[in-house]
Image (cartoon, rainbow, N blue to C red; front, side):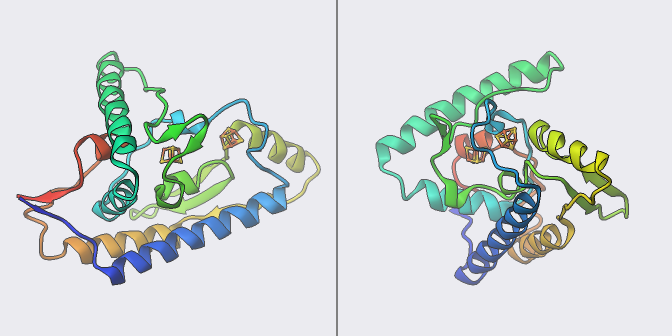
Length: 202
Ligand code: SF4
Ligand code: SF4
């Protein structure tokens, strides 16, 4: 089986999407005077699904830069988390498990973390492909700030996710354009992306 790789040109475009999302997040956080500093919670235990081979491949580019022993530790945790997810989902509960890439509260692969990891926290909006508009209020700490702003009749700044999500979808389409029959649609947690190894072509 051949490993699916990300051409340099697409990697550069993905990095630009990530950077743009970070900048938009930082700008909204700055305007709300919001930060994760001192938070008793850690959002890396949230159950999120990811849909692109592009991000899966890039995550593995980061994994490969780690020492082998560290990779093995992460993979052991990833397999454990995948099993725990399955147990929780079987009982119809939304899993709350720390991401296998989180060590002592910090992301081991911070520069390679996925788009969702770069958007969670501040208020955001997006338009789905079917035209439905979604609004995300931000995390509980951010909501406290925005509720005070609202009561002061101030405007709430928000990240508009749609353009960057569209760019990511375009990137994904370019990668799998001629491979759709060999690359079925995916819906995976980070733990699964790690436990399965990098994506391969049958
Ligand atoms: S996003 Fe919010 S809840 Fe999550 S760690 Fe930051 S401050 Fe805490
Ligand atoms: S990849 Fe990093 S930032 Fe994202 S959930 Fe895992 S530890 Fe947290």
